[in-house]
Each structure stands twice: as structure tokens, then as C-alpha cells.
Amino acid sequence: MTDSILDGLGPADVERVLAAGRPLTLPQGWSPIAESTPADKAYLITEGEVSVRRGGVEIATLGPGSVVGEAAIVNRTLRSATVVALTPLRVVHFTSDTIHQLVEQVPAFGAALRAAAARRLEGS
Image: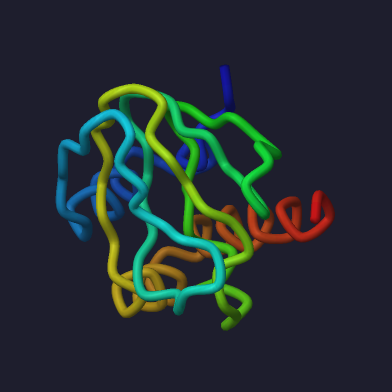
């Protein structure tokens, strides 16, 4: 479905990134990220699928390996879209502080996040 943001990382870096977050299960219909709100968290989807909506209109569907919420953290902006779980989800939850630490401590992860955020901006 989608390439994983972790694909370019070595096994030790993948382990470090996953260990820095907190695994969660979210129900179908849940909206963990709302448009125009502060960037305080991001999620790595490990199972399930989400709808990304701007102004109530779906602009993307994302699944395992995708990160949501990173663009606003990386770019220090308000959320540009709402994310809604289309299925039950398993995710790894990261606070914005954790994302900033990982960007500094795991350069390949930082590069992958910046690239993902840039792609999201291009699609705006």
C-alpha cells in the first residue's frame, strides 16, 4: 500500500524510533488529529487505514508505514488536515518533543520525516 517511513533506517534505528513512542490501539471512527489545532503529537500507523481530510474533503488514504501529524511538527504550524480512522488502528504515538529528539538523534529518521512533510506540503 504505502512505503514505510522506516524503510531507509537500519534495524537499530528502527528499534530506537519504535521504542521512543508508545503503542496504542484506536477505534474505527476516532479522529486523533484535527485540522487547525496545535501540533502536539504524531502517529506511525502499524495496522489499519486512515482518511486524511481537509475542509471535510478526503485528500488521501494512508495505511501501515505512514506517519500522520509530522508535517505540522516539522514545519511548526497548525494542523492542515483532520485524520479519521477508517478501520481499527494500531499506531505508535509520539509527542512533539519525542519527534524533535528523534530527528536530532536518528538522522535518517529526521530526513524521512522532512521528506514526508515536504511531500504533504506539495500536495496542499
